[in-house]
Image (tube, rainbow, N blue to C red; front, top):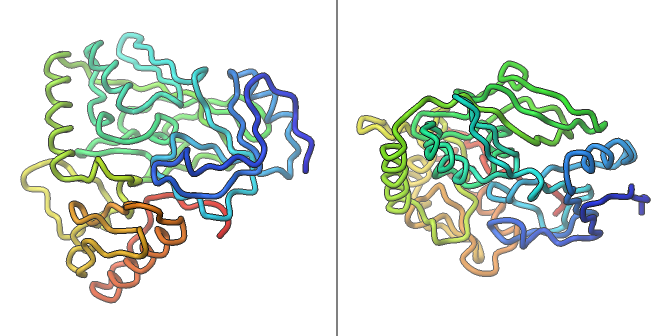
Length: 305
């Protein structure tokens, strides 16, 4: 096994990842590194041999780690990277800060990042995947993001650098996002908090928030998130094409497409990563046979079978 650099944070060999993902599946990573702070992260990546793969991991809300685990150093940011500060019209958040916390703290300061309130996960993942809902996206408000390259250099990335698309960014391979700066529109704090409460109520009424899921399983074929408007058409929404193919509630072992929202893949008990990914692939094949539409995974799948 490769000799690892000395660190001030926590470096754990052969670390199971199942308890770090919302779906509670997956084998071990060769190493899990939880850096103490920015300097610790930079020093580690600078000293890490070039042939060792790096996988930055957020809170595991949008992730299937396959049952064979990951031949990589998984980097998971924690307390040293979760600060949230408001600076005039800007909100600056560490990559480990939870989306919901950022939305609430911004609202306290009269800044509108309400679309983040119902998005599971952390700011690093929101930037990486251009997270969005209700017709708003991370790309709309991002001023710049700070990241550390695989070589250990601190860089600043603008929206142009990241080339945002629907559920996509061009984040360079091996880069670890550490912070994001948002230009948030102003709003009345009470109204912003009320809007978020309304969004939460709608989410809880339509999504299986009490089940073990990883959020939306597939991207909408329409190429955009729900707008939240009354006239929002559903023809090319992932849940609708899955439902039309008769796959609401479909199962493979303890993996199931939710009865409540058929674009949510849930672990009803002791599902393996293979069960979950296998069911997802079955859904993709059957939807294609029914409608000619090829669903694209929104959940990231990594590791070995």
